[in-house]
Image 1: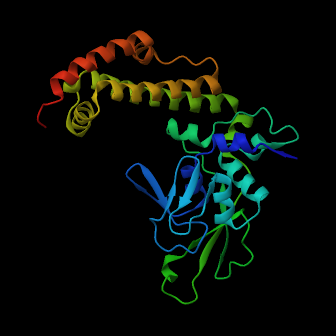
Image 2: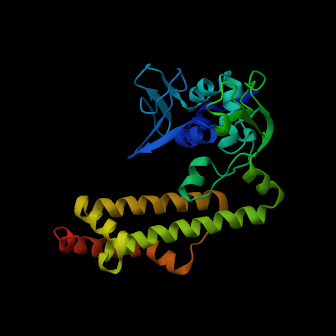
Image 3: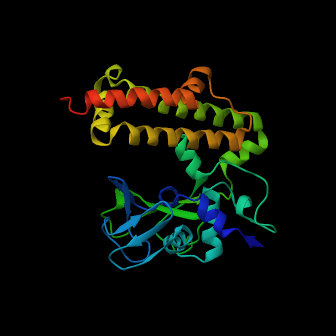
Length: 281
Protein backbone atom coordinates (compact mmCIF):
# COMPACT_ATOMS: atom_id res chain seq x y z
CA UNK A 1 0.00 0.00 0.00
CA UNK A 2 1.43 3.35 -1.04
CA UNK A 3 0.87 6.60 0.88
CA UNK A 4 1.10 9.70 -1.29
CA UNK A 5 2.71 11.85 1.42
CA UNK A 6 3.83 14.77 -0.72
CA UNK A 7 0.45 15.13 -2.38
CA UNK A 8 -1.34 15.12 0.97
CA UNK A 9 1.02 17.69 2.47
CA UNK A 10 0.54 19.88 -0.58
CA UNK A 11 -3.27 19.69 -0.38
CA UNK A 12 -3.64 19.94 3.40
CA UNK A 13 -4.16 23.25 5.18
CA UNK A 14 -2.80 22.69 8.70
CA UNK A 15 -5.15 25.25 10.24
CA UNK A 16 -8.24 23.60 8.76
CA UNK A 17 -6.96 20.15 9.69
CA UNK A 18 -6.37 21.26 13.29
CA UNK A 19 -9.93 22.57 13.54
CA UNK A 20 -11.39 19.40 11.99
CA UNK A 21 -9.39 17.17 14.34
CA UNK A 22 -10.79 19.06 17.33
CA UNK A 23 -7.68 20.92 18.47
CA UNK A 24 -8.32 24.07 20.50
CA UNK A 25 -7.37 26.99 18.28
CA UNK A 26 -7.88 30.73 18.04
CA UNK A 27 -7.17 33.38 15.44
CA UNK A 28 -4.83 36.22 16.43
CA UNK A 29 -4.49 38.66 13.56
CA UNK A 30 -3.23 36.72 10.55
CA UNK A 31 -2.01 33.68 12.47
CA UNK A 32 -3.58 30.71 14.22
CA UNK A 33 -2.56 29.68 17.73
CA UNK A 34 -3.39 26.39 19.40
CA UNK A 35 -2.75 24.22 22.41
CA UNK A 36 0.47 22.41 21.55
CA UNK A 37 -0.21 18.77 20.58
CA UNK A 38 3.30 17.72 21.65
CA UNK A 39 3.22 18.56 25.36
CA UNK A 40 0.69 19.08 28.15
CA UNK A 41 -0.13 22.62 27.12
CA UNK A 42 -2.77 24.47 29.14
CA UNK A 43 -2.75 27.95 27.59
CA UNK A 44 -3.16 28.85 23.93
CA UNK A 45 -0.39 31.11 22.71
CA UNK A 46 2.91 29.28 22.47
CA UNK A 47 2.04 27.03 19.52
CA UNK A 48 1.55 28.60 16.09
CA UNK A 49 0.01 26.81 13.11
CA UNK A 50 0.78 27.92 9.57
CA UNK A 51 -0.69 26.63 6.31
CA UNK A 52 1.56 23.56 6.25
CA UNK A 53 3.06 22.97 9.71
CA UNK A 54 3.08 23.81 13.41
CA UNK A 55 5.75 25.08 15.80
CA UNK A 56 5.70 25.40 19.58
CA UNK A 57 7.90 28.10 21.10
CA UNK A 58 7.52 26.57 24.56
CA UNK A 59 8.72 23.01 23.99
CA UNK A 60 10.40 23.46 20.60
CA UNK A 61 8.30 20.82 18.86
CA UNK A 62 7.47 21.31 15.22
CA UNK A 63 6.41 19.30 12.20
CA UNK A 64 4.20 19.00 9.18
CA UNK A 65 0.46 18.44 9.21
CA UNK A 66 0.80 14.64 9.51
CA UNK A 67 3.17 14.93 12.48
CA UNK A 68 0.72 17.36 14.08
CA UNK A 69 -2.09 14.81 13.71
CA UNK A 70 0.13 12.04 15.14
CA UNK A 71 0.97 14.12 18.20
CA UNK A 72 -2.59 15.27 18.82
CA UNK A 73 -4.21 11.86 18.28
CA UNK A 74 -1.41 9.89 19.95
CA UNK A 75 -1.26 7.41 17.09
CA UNK A 76 1.11 6.07 14.46
CA UNK A 77 1.90 7.46 11.04
CA UNK A 78 -0.62 5.41 9.05
CA UNK A 79 -3.55 6.25 11.31
CA UNK A 80 -2.63 9.95 11.35
CA UNK A 81 -2.17 9.94 7.57
CA UNK A 82 -5.62 8.44 7.09
CA UNK A 83 -7.23 10.96 9.47
CA UNK A 84 -5.72 13.90 7.54
CA UNK A 85 -6.59 12.29 4.20
CA UNK A 86 -10.27 11.94 5.18
CA UNK A 87 -10.36 15.68 5.95
CA UNK A 88 -8.63 16.57 2.68
CA UNK A 89 -10.84 14.64 0.30
CA UNK A 90 -10.99 11.00 1.31
CA UNK A 91 -8.47 8.27 2.09
CA UNK A 92 -8.92 6.78 -1.39
CA UNK A 93 -7.44 9.95 -2.85
CA UNK A 94 -4.05 9.43 -1.19
CA UNK A 95 -3.82 5.72 -0.31
CA UNK A 96 -3.64 2.92 -2.83
CA UNK A 97 -1.41 0.69 -4.93
CA UNK A 98 -0.54 3.67 -7.15
CA UNK A 99 -0.93 6.49 -4.64
CA UNK A 100 -4.65 7.11 -4.96
CA UNK A 101 -7.34 6.85 -7.60
CA UNK A 102 -8.84 9.31 -10.02
CA UNK A 103 -11.42 10.73 -7.58
CA UNK A 104 -10.62 14.44 -7.59
CA UNK A 105 -12.91 15.49 -4.79
CA UNK A 106 -12.47 19.08 -3.68
CA UNK A 107 -9.85 19.54 -0.96
CA UNK A 108 -10.15 21.30 2.41
CA UNK A 109 -8.13 24.29 1.17
CA UNK A 110 -10.33 24.60 -1.93
CA UNK A 111 -13.46 24.38 0.22
CA UNK A 112 -12.16 27.23 2.35
CA UNK A 113 -11.47 29.36 -0.73
CA UNK A 114 -15.04 29.14 -2.04
CA UNK A 115 -16.77 29.08 1.35
CA UNK A 116 -17.79 25.42 1.35
CA UNK A 117 -17.71 23.30 4.50
CA UNK A 118 -16.97 19.60 4.17
CA UNK A 119 -17.21 18.19 7.67
CA UNK A 120 -16.29 14.53 8.10
CA UNK A 121 -19.33 12.56 9.24
CA UNK A 122 -19.35 11.74 12.94
CA UNK A 123 -21.86 10.19 15.30
CA UNK A 124 -22.19 10.03 19.07
CA UNK A 125 -20.65 6.77 20.23
CA UNK A 126 -20.60 6.93 24.02
CA UNK A 127 -21.08 9.02 27.15
CA UNK A 128 -18.42 8.04 29.63
CA UNK A 129 -15.86 9.12 32.17
CA UNK A 130 -13.36 6.49 31.03
CA UNK A 131 -11.62 7.32 27.75
CA UNK A 132 -9.15 4.44 27.84
CA UNK A 133 -10.94 2.56 25.06
CA UNK A 134 -11.28 5.54 22.75
CA UNK A 135 -7.70 6.53 21.96
CA UNK A 136 -7.66 5.90 18.21
CA UNK A 137 -7.95 8.57 15.52
CA UNK A 138 -11.52 7.44 14.83
CA UNK A 139 -12.71 8.97 18.12
CA UNK A 140 -12.89 12.48 19.54
CA UNK A 141 -14.08 13.40 23.01
CA UNK A 142 -15.70 16.56 24.28
CA UNK A 143 -16.04 17.38 27.95
CA UNK A 144 -19.61 17.66 29.21
CA UNK A 145 -19.38 21.17 30.66
CA UNK A 146 -22.07 20.39 33.23
CA UNK A 147 -19.52 18.06 34.86
CA UNK A 148 -16.48 20.35 34.42
CA UNK A 149 -16.17 21.01 38.15
CA UNK A 150 -16.93 17.42 39.07
CA UNK A 151 -13.96 15.19 40.04
CA UNK A 152 -15.61 12.44 37.99
CA UNK A 153 -15.93 14.30 34.72
CA UNK A 154 -17.94 12.87 31.84
CA UNK A 155 -17.22 13.05 28.12
CA UNK A 156 -19.26 12.75 24.97
CA UNK A 157 -17.34 10.49 22.61
CA UNK A 158 -17.83 10.84 18.86
CA UNK A 159 -16.80 8.38 16.20
CA UNK A 160 -15.70 9.81 12.85
CA UNK A 161 -16.72 7.62 9.95
CA UNK A 162 -14.07 6.86 7.32
CA UNK A 163 -15.93 8.62 4.55
CA UNK A 164 -16.12 12.07 3.10
CA UNK A 165 -19.55 13.70 2.49
CA UNK A 166 -18.50 15.47 -0.71
CA UNK A 167 -16.83 12.33 -2.05
CA UNK A 168 -20.05 10.41 -1.33
CA UNK A 169 -22.06 13.08 -3.15
CA UNK A 170 -19.67 13.02 -6.12
CA UNK A 171 -20.15 9.28 -6.48
CA UNK A 172 -23.90 9.10 -5.83
CA UNK A 173 -25.08 12.29 -7.53
CA UNK A 174 -22.40 13.86 -9.77
CA UNK A 175 -24.80 16.51 -11.08
CA UNK A 176 -25.59 17.81 -7.58
CA UNK A 177 -21.89 17.73 -6.68
CA UNK A 178 -21.00 19.85 -9.70
CA UNK A 179 -23.95 22.16 -9.10
CA UNK A 180 -22.86 22.77 -5.51
CA UNK A 181 -19.30 23.62 -6.52
CA UNK A 182 -20.54 25.79 -9.40
CA UNK A 183 -22.83 27.84 -7.15
CA UNK A 184 -20.10 28.38 -4.56
CA UNK A 185 -17.61 29.41 -7.24
CA UNK A 186 -20.19 31.88 -8.59
CA UNK A 187 -20.65 33.34 -5.11
CA UNK A 188 -16.91 33.60 -4.46
CA UNK A 189 -16.29 35.31 -7.80
CA UNK A 190 -19.18 37.67 -7.11
CA UNK A 191 -17.63 38.63 -3.78
CA UNK A 192 -14.23 39.40 -5.31
CA UNK A 193 -15.85 41.20 -8.24
CA UNK A 194 -17.54 43.52 -5.71
CA UNK A 195 -14.18 44.04 -4.04
CA UNK A 196 -12.67 45.00 -7.39
CA UNK A 197 -15.50 47.41 -8.13
CA UNK A 198 -15.29 49.02 -4.69
CA UNK A 199 -11.54 49.43 -5.07
CA UNK A 200 -12.15 51.08 -8.44
CA UNK A 201 -14.86 53.39 -7.07
CA UNK A 202 -14.73 53.59 -3.24
CA UNK A 203 -17.51 56.16 -3.25
CA UNK A 204 -20.08 53.52 -4.19
CA UNK A 205 -19.33 51.47 -1.06
CA UNK A 206 -21.13 52.57 2.07
CA UNK A 207 -20.78 51.77 5.74
CA UNK A 208 -18.12 49.47 7.12
CA UNK A 209 -17.33 47.89 3.76
CA UNK A 210 -16.63 51.30 2.24
CA UNK A 211 -14.40 52.33 5.13
CA UNK A 212 -12.49 49.08 4.83
CA UNK A 213 -11.92 49.62 1.11
CA UNK A 214 -10.74 53.20 1.62
CA UNK A 215 -8.41 52.01 4.38
CA UNK A 216 -6.95 49.39 2.04
CA UNK A 217 -6.36 52.01 -0.64
CA UNK A 218 -4.75 54.33 1.87
CA UNK A 219 -2.56 51.70 3.56
CA UNK A 220 -1.36 49.48 0.71
CA UNK A 221 -2.40 51.27 -2.47
CA UNK A 222 -4.48 50.13 -5.40
CA UNK A 223 -1.87 47.89 -7.01
CA UNK A 224 -1.40 45.60 -4.02
CA UNK A 225 -5.10 45.49 -3.18
CA UNK A 226 -6.04 44.70 -6.75
CA UNK A 227 -3.30 42.07 -6.91
CA UNK A 228 -4.83 40.30 -3.91
CA UNK A 229 -8.33 40.35 -5.40
CA UNK A 230 -7.09 39.21 -8.81
CA UNK A 231 -5.08 36.37 -7.21
CA UNK A 232 -8.18 35.13 -5.40
CA UNK A 233 -10.21 35.29 -8.61
CA UNK A 234 -7.55 33.26 -10.40
CA UNK A 235 -7.55 30.69 -7.58
CA UNK A 236 -11.35 30.35 -7.70
CA UNK A 237 -11.27 29.97 -11.49
CA UNK A 238 -8.58 27.29 -11.11
CA UNK A 239 -10.78 25.36 -8.65
CA UNK A 240 -13.75 25.65 -11.03
CA UNK A 241 -11.65 24.50 -13.98
CA UNK A 242 -10.24 21.56 -12.05
CA UNK A 243 -13.57 20.22 -10.79
CA UNK A 244 -16.03 21.43 -13.44
CA UNK A 245 -13.96 21.59 -16.61
CA UNK A 246 -16.51 23.51 -18.65
CA UNK A 247 -17.10 26.27 -16.11
CA UNK A 248 -18.06 29.70 -17.41
CA UNK A 249 -18.76 32.51 -14.91
CA UNK A 250 -22.12 34.33 -15.11
CA UNK A 251 -22.08 37.13 -17.68
CA UNK A 252 -21.66 40.12 -15.37
CA UNK A 253 -18.94 38.34 -13.40
CA UNK A 254 -17.15 37.12 -16.55
CA UNK A 255 -16.91 40.68 -17.84
CA UNK A 256 -15.49 41.96 -14.58
CA UNK A 257 -12.91 39.19 -14.10
CA UNK A 258 -11.70 39.12 -17.70
CA UNK A 259 -8.21 40.46 -18.39
CA UNK A 260 -9.64 43.57 -20.07
CA UNK A 261 -12.22 44.10 -17.33
CA UNK A 262 -9.66 43.83 -14.54
CA UNK A 263 -7.32 46.11 -16.47
CA UNK A 264 -9.96 48.82 -16.57
CA UNK A 265 -10.67 48.37 -12.87
CA UNK A 266 -6.96 48.62 -12.03
CA UNK A 267 -6.76 51.96 -13.88
CA UNK A 268 -9.86 53.23 -12.06
CA UNK A 269 -8.53 52.03 -8.70
CA UNK A 270 -5.22 53.81 -9.23
CA UNK A 271 -7.09 57.02 -9.99
CA UNK A 272 -9.27 56.51 -6.88
CA UNK A 273 -6.17 55.90 -4.79
CA UNK A 274 -4.84 59.34 -5.67
CA UNK A 275 -8.11 60.89 -4.51
CA UNK A 276 -8.68 58.86 -1.36
CA UNK A 277 -5.21 58.20 0.06
CA UNK A 278 -5.31 61.37 2.17
CA UNK A 279 -9.06 61.62 2.59
CA UNK A 280 -10.39 61.74 6.18
CA UNK A 281 -12.66 58.94 7.40
